[in-house]
Image (cartoon, rainbow, N blue to C red; front, side, top):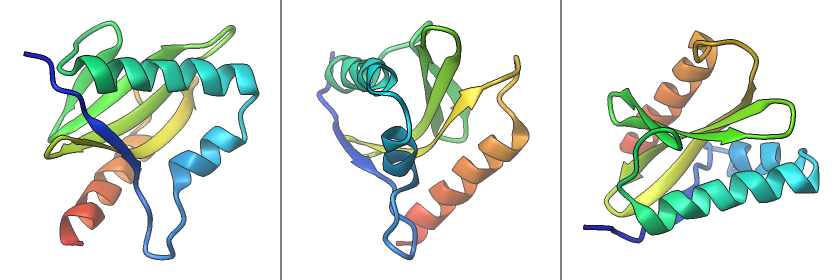
Length: 113
């Protein structure tokens, strides 16, 4: 059964929203493509590959193909809310450990709030 999720940006202790800032720095066409993929997840949850992949520990990724590169938006579910923790342009096969660790740390911070 599909669930419609709400979406929110993770905000750090200073109130900054890293994923929102990252998105604002992208070309409009890339923002639109990533936004459409997030909306597909939001309206069609639960979804699997090729759009969504479970990374373990409650962490998921939205996998977006842009014109000449690949974007990832890492998120967790908090009830029926999709919390966007971290996003990056993928440059290698594996999700870089630094990006994964950053998302995990933000998830921990979220749980402490």
